[in-house]
Image (cartoon, rainbow, N blue to C red; front, side, top):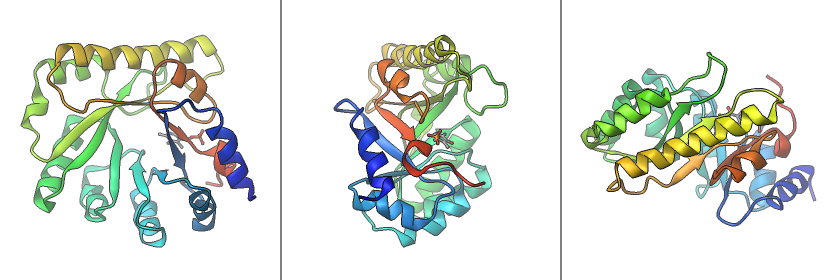
Length: 224
Ligand SMILES: *Cc1c(COP(=O)(O)O)cnc(C)c1O
């Protein structure tokens, strides 16, 4: 068994039923992705448009591609034109959401997205603030979307070894998801909570994550 297949198995062995593993393959070459694919992995996460558009045609067509990086409005067209994106997890502003919706409508497709919420301590991370997110749903602005389905939220915890801080960040994201559902009980398919990476995904699952995005634990360290 390849080391990717072994590491993938080890991660899978720790996941409860119902938790979806996204193998974050950014900066890794196609042969590594194929090792994971041949070991049964189908969901892959990439964070750069240029890289994902190159990889998509080189991989089998039943891969579920998740886009997880900061997406510039002027790259939306290129990303959606692949018609291969299962989920854009990192929608971090209403401006970007509107751009995605326009482009999806133009292409005659439905874009599936998660809204990224900023719960971490660092100021540099992208995302809706919790207040802006609640404002968006309490004013039901999602009703303006024509070709976009908001499937839930995505969050990243603070980049720290302090377990309590990480737990608090994940709990905050889980609470937001619940608040939104309570506020808009008619929202359909707002089911997903994507949080947790190699170092913290068990804590994310404990807090309610149903999608985890694991890279280095499967593919090894990235060479940037
Ligand atoms: C790179 C990345 C990951 C995976 O990180 P690892 O620590 O390698 O598991 C997860 N989520 C996002 C948004 C990322 O950019």
